[in-house]
Image (cartoon, rainbow, N blue to C red; front, side, top):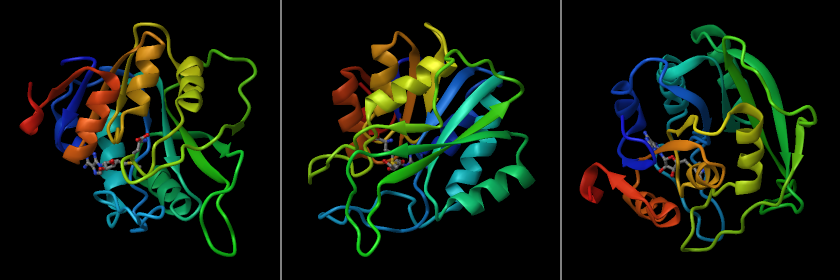
Length: 222
Ligand SMILES: C[S@@+](CC[C@H](N)C(=O)[O-])C[C@H]1O[C@@H](n2cnc3c(N)ncnc32)[C@H](O)[C@@H]1O
């Protein structure tokens, strides 16, 4: 299994090729399945019509995650009930906690403007956590996006906090829906190994540019 690569492809198929228990931590931000377009550019990401993509990915993630490890899953209030119901009924993950990511400013919207997102913490076995002061409300600015950026780019600072809490140097961290590669960049900053998977070629290019590293698969094989 090649490390420190953005893999171009469908994560459901790609992860099936990974050995069991090979990943130390998963941090991911899948399409929420609500078919919403974001920002002034009304961008719609791939698979955002398909809430089941999360479920399929979780089943594969459980298999490859090492025992006593965690998975941080971004979600929102609309998708949360469906997702937790699925996790409890159809996976072996334990739901350990729900983190609220509070943004400094509120975003676009009408009548009720968005100022938070949710992150589910799932466990396989009994993971250890490194920090004694990890609040379940994390405050961090969101990333403004424009027509050249990914509409869901997540802040590196927030992801670094999760990495610090749930991994050690040299660990291998997976983001199956890596978008612009924020998780991969955070891993690189913190001397963790990483694998990012992304279906949309334009974001594979973007993530590859950010991580200044290699692509594998699809037309980006180089
Ligand atoms: C919410 S975005 C992730 C954004 C990312 N957290 C960032 O900071 O840029 C979800 C990403 O999953 C990708 N995606 C959708 N279906 C996929 C699949 N089956 N396999 C891999 N990536 C997929 C989309 O193209 C989109 O870029």
